[in-house]
Length: 132
Image 1 (tube, rainbow, N blue to C red):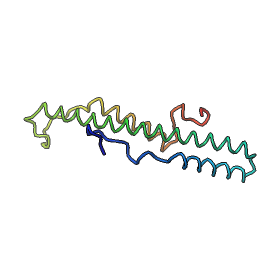
Image 2 (cartoon, one colour):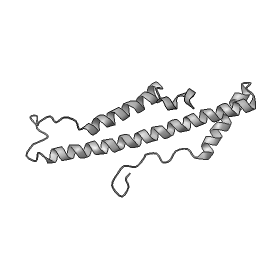
Image 3 (cartoon, one colour):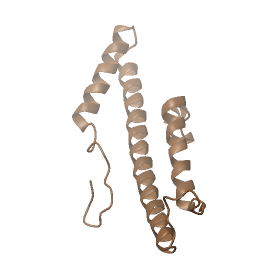
């Protein structure tokens, strides 16, 4: 998956379309009405929940794009380091240990933030339920 420059593009397409989000909102509102909520209140609450979900999906996609970009840059940095030492047998047990390039730390920080959100429900402040 790459563009003309060989860069990786976002995986999984563009995600749910406006119709899918609208249907999700309609279904949530209907469920809340069934539970006894006033239709107007249910509609507003469903709209808020769908808006939050959309923002979280968008943020997650942006984070993945940043992560893949940093991984690509880290790979390029590793390639440059290896090219700087043409006489080294990198498969050998006595090959020098090179420190990770800074791009790798950035990529891992992005990944950790994304995984904290997905696995532990620890979202950035602007994506908390109270913030939407």
